[in-house]
Every structure is written in C-alpha cells, then in structure tokens.
Amino acid sequence: NRRAYTLNKTGTIKDTRTLVLPGYVEPAATHDSQIIILGALNSLSSREMITYTTQETVSHVLTPEGAQIALQGSHEARVWTALPPKGAGEPLTPQQLEGKVGAETSKVGQGRAFKNKWIGKEGNGLVRLASSIHDTTQLEMREVDSTGTLKSGEKALAELRKRKLIVQRKGQWFSVYKGSHFSTSTAKPETDLTVDMLNSGSWKTSTYKKYNFEAAGIPTNGGALHPLLKVREEIRNIFLEMGFAEMPTSSFVESGFWCFDALFVPQQHPAREVQDTFYLSDPSTSLPPPADYYSRVSAVHENGGFGSTGYRAPWSHEESRKLLLRTHTTASSAAMLWKLAARCRGEKDEDEADEAAHASSVPSAPKKNGDDGFRPAKLFSIDRVFRNETMDATHLAEFHQVEGVVADRGLTLADLIGFMRVFFKKMGIENIRFKPAYNPYTEPSLEIFAFHPLLKKWVEVGNSGMFRPEMLEPMGFPKDVHVHGWGIGLERPTMIRYGISNIRTLVGHKVSIEGVESSPAVRF
Ligand code: PHE
Image (cartoon, rainbow, N blue to C red; front, side):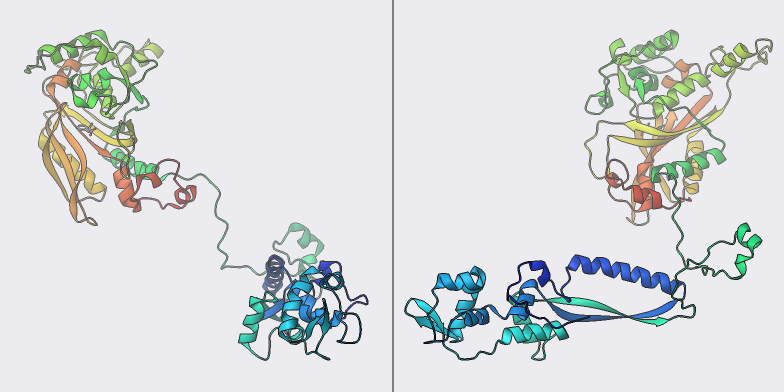
C-alpha cells in the first residue's frame, strides 16, 4: 500500500508524526501485529478455512530522518535550495540560513554542501556555487522506501544504516490460500454436541471443530508433594510392609532428659554443648519427668547399676531439665520405649488406661502366670531434627531422620544386621557394610556404609546399635529384652534420587515450586 511522497505546499512538515510513513513501523508495533496476524492465521487454518505458508525476508525501512530526506531532500540539498545563486541576490548570513531551514539542517547540511562544492562563501554570507545538484541521498531514500533495498548493494546500505537513515527489518510474509472449509464468515465451530442442538436439529448444519489428538492438555492444578515427602512416603511403606508401627514424633522441643539422659548420654558429652545443640531460652526448663524413672536414670549415670559402673560424675538436675530442639529422633524412641515398658513396671500402659477410662465395665485382662508384661514391638519414625551446624551445600541446621527400633527377647547383633540388609535392599541398596562405631546409648554400635554406584565409593548412610542395659533397665524392661535401633538421613537419599547436589535447592527459600510440582514420583 505504498504511495509516492509529495511535499506539502509550504515545504515544511510540522508534526513529525506525519513523517512516520508507510514502511516505517515502530519495532514493538511490528511484534504485536505479527502476533495478532499469526494468531488469526492459525485460528483460521485450524478450522481449515485457509492454508498458509511463511517466508522470511530482510529489507530496509526509513527512519523518521530518512523519511524526511525522501520528502524534502537531504540536509545539504535543502541548504543549497535555500541559498541564492552566486551573483543573483543577497548572500544569506548563517543566521538567515538557520531561520529558513532550521538549526539542525543548517548545521549538518552546510558541511556536506561545502564538501560537494555546491555552496561557497561570499563576503559574510553564503551562496550557491553549483547551478544544479544531484541529491543522491534523497534518491537512495526513495529507492529504499519503494524497494526495501538499493540496487548499488550492501555497501551503500551499510553506509545509510551507519548514518541512521535506514534500519534493517526482518519481515515475515504469509501466502494465504483458500482452505477446504473456506468462508468469509467466521462463525465459531461447535466443540460440543448439546441437547439443544439435537432438539432443534441445528446439529445437522453446524460445523464442528476437529478434535486435536496432538494437544498437550492443560496441566492439572493441584497440590504437589515435595521430593522429601515422596521419599518419606516410600520409606514409610517399607516400614509398614515389614510390620512396623509409626511413632508419634510431634515434639520438636524436648528436654535434656529425654534427648540425652534417658539414652545414657553423659551430661558432659560434647553433643550437649551449645555449638551442637539449640537450647530454648523462653521457656528454658521442662516439667519434671516421671519421678521414679528420673531417679533410676540419675542413679545409673552417677553410680552405675545393672552391671555398669556409671559415669561417676555429679548429676545435674539443671542439665536434665534444659529445653532444647531435639538433635535426634531417638529422643522420641526413648519416650516410646519407656511407654512400652509400662506393663513391665506393673503399670497399665496409656492405651489400656484410656480404654479403662472409657469402658470401666470391662476389666483388664488378668496377668498370665509368669507374664512379665513385655510385648515385642517394631517402631519407626521419620521426622525433623535440629543441630547447630555450620551450613553448607550438604548441611542444614534442620534435617530429617529415619529411625527404626525393634524390641524383643534375645535379639542379637545378627538380628540387627539381618534387618538392615533387608531394609536397605527394599530401598534399592544391595551392597552394604558395617563398621564398629561408638554411641553413648548403644553397644555394640555400627556405622552403615553403602556403595555409591555413581561416586564409586563407600559412603556412610546410617548409624545403628544395640541399646545399652543402662538405658533399657531403668525403664523397667526385663534383662532378656534387647532393643536394636538404627537411623538414616532422609535428605541424602533424596538428593541422590533426584540428582540434586546442593541441599538448598531441596530445602529452603530457593526451592522452585515448579521443580516440586514436576518432580517425578519415587519407587524404590
Ligand atoms: N540417633 C542416632 C543418630 O543420630 C542414630 C541411631 C538410632 C543410632 C538408633 C543407634 C540407634 O545418628
């Protein structure tokens, strides 16, 4: 839709917007209209009303300055036009010239006009020297405007680009053809067959949108489990299929008593230092633990008993009553084991007491002869623990522990090892090894190592052991009841599973919600 430019009668154009001629379109507008056009083409072609092909072109368009030159001539030509021929009138002073052609044109145009020997000085004024001129720039502008390029070639185009008179424009051309359902009216095709359409009979004449079997479908909008929770669920299933029951682990805040003392961790143990454990300041002390159990625990620490010499260090009530964020889920295991031993202590366990309270007419079953009240148990937990660690790519101050505890008569270390082999195999880890280790609450203790197929080396995956008599007997367990336990982290297997190397992409404010939403399910 091009038209030849005509100079308006006064030879000046006041509103620069009128200089934005066909062919010069702001880039943003180009982009927008392109999207609109493409959208319309796609919509029409999806209804088979049209087909189209696309061609890319590169052409040039005029800048506003270029368009002005196309209309009015180059600055130098305008300067030449404004001046009187030599000897045929009063020479113009630079001020007069500026008044006629404007400051910009006068400044830029004089230089080039002098260089071309089109104009010269006469006295204090300026006059034409050339009797006629050939305004190449204007001709080039007109050529670019009507053809999008220059016959003389790329070098000349590059020069004009440098002078900011033209800009390159990538163009997209669409060749549009009539399609099999071509029509000049754009009634929306039906996407559903409705009862109304059947009743009215309009279905016979309606056009229908073709079903698109290639469409990706709309992503479902719902909650998503965090990768840690997916792995937790898998591990939980392993425990459940092995007959374990889940322990309550909601108490993130524990006392020194349950986190350490009950586990026979000495009161001077380095794990209790503030650089390893977060202590609470308000409130800072716990309610007193059960009195007789407390005295048995303090006694075994201070003076020994049950075959142990104890630590023979003065007992601190204060240390025991300190409130802290639990450093391991073994704190919860200890509380559960103490409950499990209730029947052995001759107490009703809490469930029984509960039942009795609700149905007092049902008498509790009388103890059988020789029954010491012990019932075997397999317990597990997966929950959060807190340690005052220096944080780095693989350590945070809070993380999750997976813990299993088995209590039965006559359990041995072989049972523990056997159990762990089965458990890890279910997690897909066949190759495990054990190394003697030390825990204050287990003897013997074993660290668990698994062969990492990618790192091609043995990595520590967990910690385990047989709980000490100093821990179990004050709770009231009979001597032949042995308890073994083990703990593994949840973050490490999850990171391996999802190929994550920095824990901060798994936990914390840098976690991407999209990553969580698209993370695949885990099957061990
Ligand atoms: N509590 C130990 C830890 O924090 C794990 C463990 C649990 C070890 C039970 C032995 C028995 O690593």
